Image (cartoon, rainbow, N blue to C red; front, top):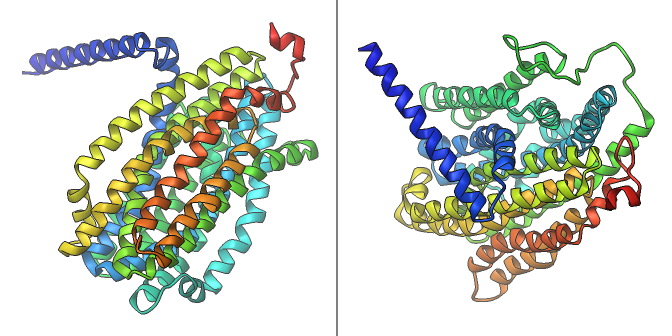
Length: 490
């Protein structure tokens, strides 16, 4: 019996290997991505995709479980709380984006000690940023939720969730920096395992505390906060240079020994991170008027909009992988002075992500109604939510492409242009479109247009920037050994 099972396993592995080889060859022949670069890209991307799915699933699980237990008004309350949580998280993502840019270039250039100093500087900046945010959320939770349209059940649910989860932001900042540090040195597997474990823990705790113990929104918040803290504790082991059963020790470890502050590196980190933070914060702020506009159509619309955004966030897990692969591979090639090769890597990752997102979004479109039914059960609410799921799937394609383009630019340290592109998409196009729904018969259709425009516009602008090759010149000021123009042209 065992021999038959082993033989079956061998045959299965062989079939999968042949399928993978055939797929790689087909993608190469179709001009999507070079076969050799596909392997490098997927090695970096797939753990980050799993990690992204694990991270994004936490809020989605909370929405689904709370929706099952308490209904749409409580789901709307969580949507309001998520907006504040994500605003803070976006700050950490921006800072972590600057971290991976400098870590990958210094590590790729053989400057491991300098890369470790980048991580230390990032952690100090993170502490200075997260402390006042967490305190403010706890102290002013209720008025903050009321500010964006929360009232009644939604107000109470949103305030409770925000108070419980705000302290965990300190761990989330550390988790983001640790994950991006690992990615910058080419290890996306270690944070994937830890993050995936945290996601499973969140599901178990949330379901038990909400449905089993009956703590409602309080239970959802406790489950999420506890799982985030557990991930931070686990990642701190590897970040200090210790291994997990023989692997996973960071090659750029942090510790009490050695210097913690390098003024030049801090300035570089702030210069690279500031546009990323600005872009992310601006994206987070834009959610508040969208929620306020949605609340004018009722709590069911707020819940539907949030479900659509959660679905797109889950699809965005692919972008987590492709974006970090682009940042790491492009950054390392630039750090080695190989500008032409860096461009080829960027182009291949962008084309691959476009193909993946078209296929994934098509699958979501076909399953829009069943997906909506997971979160709400009233027929009218299901129809409204399904419409937002469709819109989210359509907007996920430019969202995914933009992630890979931005990742390539971020690998070069070119972070200002993506920030400006995001501002145009959000504030020049998306928000005016949503506001039209309040003053014209367009109604909820304005929100549909806004959800698509906020991703489509920056994707187009960032693609234009990538094709210009100006990002290569930007990268030269951040490399450990600058390459002169004559050398880079050879």
